[in-house]
Length: 367
Ligand SMILES: *Cc1c(COP(=O)(O)O)cnc(C)c1O
Ligand code: SF4
Image (tube, rainbow, N blue to C red; front, side):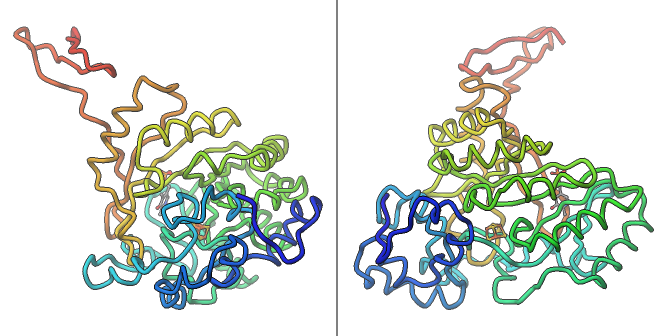
């Protein structure tokens, strides 16, 4: 929808990420002004914004189709009292995946033998209401210092079984360019590191930030992949297509990780549009995550069965390349589980398995 500005931006300003960040909304009165609605529309949610601060770029806000609280874009970026009301009733843990407990060196989360997650700070362009690391918003986790990088590289060198670093945050694409360049150089200088995997919501919420210069930095070290985070087909715009093209031209490969969110994308038609739309701009849907039991995000959880039903409806109906793995993280840092809809129906009289095809036929398979 069109936003309201006291001084409307020129086209050049709108496509400049500096302008977008300088005009990001950090309170409800700015949001109300941009959306052209009365501020008291949000009065019930104001105290939630004190606990979990509001942050959204004008670009992302403009993707909403209406100022209703049920709008799938607004649901992802505007605080609601559901985030704070639930703490007693619904439970949830600030760090349900025990990332802090699996951290051998500050900022590294090590759960699998050959890959490690690196938290580069808590800068983001938008505060996604379903964020897994919401616990960090109140902390100030600055970009890594040289001493941090020394400790990290020492650990990686001593553990040559680690081949891949997942560069996460916050959002690593929000780091100052020199800092990002330094991270890429330092990690790539560790001989046993073969791949860097960036995780970023910037191509979705601030695609203007993806410049050829930024893409060149990302691609300047070891083999570079970038996992984007698109959750809804309205997030696929000409700006995101352009950002994606810049990243591809620089030599990055792109995959997408979505979160299944109640009231945002928990139906097969919405996800079919999202996944096929991603494929069209050469982003491979990689994971569809069931929401983790994180404090302040419980109202977005759908239940595993809902996700399985959706995956079953999508199976066969859209390109197999468009189908992500439906997955969730076990509590306590025990790792990911991929789930498939039930396809093995029974065994026939000859002992052969009988499968249910995508359109519901029972087909025996000569085992
Ligand atoms: C998700 C995750 C990974 C990456 O898992 P993939 O299945 O390779 O995408 C690695 N380390 C941690 C701690 C994770 O949570
Ligand atoms: S960009 Fe990522 S880290 Fe930042 S708030 Fe959104 S989900 Fe959380």
